[in-house]
Image (cartoon, rainbow over all chains, first blue to last red; front, side, top):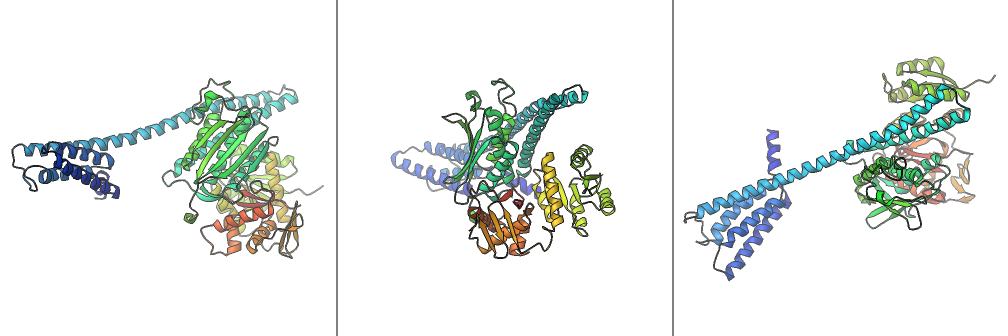
Length: 361
Length: 235
């Protein structure tokens, strides 16, 4: 019983928007017909105009209900108001029944088509999402293989035992770097699943002070990269934004790590948050080598061309930035990258401001 | 011969427990290892370790339950090992009485630092119930004067409000330890303070503007994202 009701609701959903569209379209059509009647005696155009109404209503509303309603009322309106005999219901005049039947049929057909197109759109979106996920998986598997090979190789070389101490140390340091990199990638992937898990209920957002997230991300970064100079600035007025703080911290960390790993000679990073009119802007700028112009376009797709300056420098850029984009967009923001005029790259992303009164966390 | 601190490592993954053990032993601790929750229980009562390093994901008993039942009879410090993305676990572990947590993956230096802090805390009796409410706490230019109810920055009064002072004083008493948002809320606004911790976050933003040079680059009070706040270790 319940499922039948749900099915009914699926095909015949009622909404305020639907009613408004329906009433507006019918009203407009009647008005146009009335005006046309003043200037011309022929009423051939009337059924055509009302078929147009059925088409518009079907396209602009969900489900079959409003389209069918429009078809039905059109048939009656045309019959009663705009064709001979005026202001009288009469289906008996020769040829009329056929005309009205055709009109109803056109209405139904358009409705069905429109609904089907909408469903197709939905399917297309889903398959798109599936494709993004598959691309990510491919990028991941590819990116994970290299460091794993190096770790496993380095360790087996050390265990052979014929190496000088400094050689051993070098190999182990390399293995540790690769392992750390793997850890970060895995954290990134976990973040994506975290978004996926909560997708139905929305992100676990809470009003957070931007400076806290900025401070924590920078602190963690400094521990890992003591040689890089980092400057941080947050608005003087405390700025609270609805966000999942762990994920936003991850975005900042990815951007800072990238600045070091891919900037090649980065010595300074500037992290800042500013308040805009209806969104906050967070940015990470570095003084490294900047971003290759060919890469700039596909930076956030998760599918970078492997034929970059060297395949190794682009390693990991794909996953990290794709994850950043996923996180930022899940928050309703946007992420962009550009090269700075005096060298280096800048990544900036926006986070919509919340309404302070609405926080219930 | 000196008496060495004894640490119980509760971890079911052999590879992880063996590297934790190696780090701790090479730094002068006695280490015993338990691979399951039940083993951990019997070892805690028979060996009386000075610290427990506890992984939350054990095969037989939920790590949270271990914390709760150990806390019923001893204040023995517990250091929880947790994954980054599970900040809810961290909060729950701390609220159930764990002393600190360390996030996977961690290096030797970080592990040793946390272990030292946790052991020292219980030695000095701070962080436990009824900690010192008089005396002074200082870290760098920050000085908390518990007798005068004042916080000074480089000798200057920071002019904290009543609530702001109470938050800083609480963090200072448990310096080095993470205090969860909930814990601070309950200490300041009573056990009825449920739900929003927004009032605490706003107070903290104001505190930062009074005691830190750059609010986005704190020197004294650090944010553990999604978990709570931590005051820097005192001098």
